[in-house]
Length: 112
Image 1 (tube, rainbow, N blue to C red):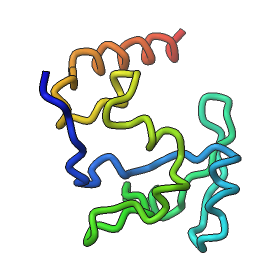
Image 2 (image 1 turned 90 degrees about the vertical axis):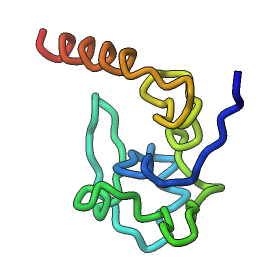
Image 3 (image 1 turned 30 degrees about the vertical axis):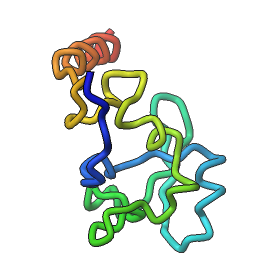
């Protein structure tokens, strides 16, 4: 199987939720965050990301994350992650059918 390598395109750098500990590591950056409750968990989301669907820490010109060493766990897992929704569309392991099934399961669970 071909080894997958990130293209650093930034398409996955969108509305990223930060857990409390992750937020504590980056709150000094000057980026404003909004506290939200998602699926019963408190998370912090960069306010600009909510408006633009783009992570303010991703530098498009340099094609890099400006907080790479401090990035949230979801960012660390994305690309070749253990869950179908964490597999990059450019990765040969990407399976749109698995994502569709996950979305259907979530929809059924939410509508109970």
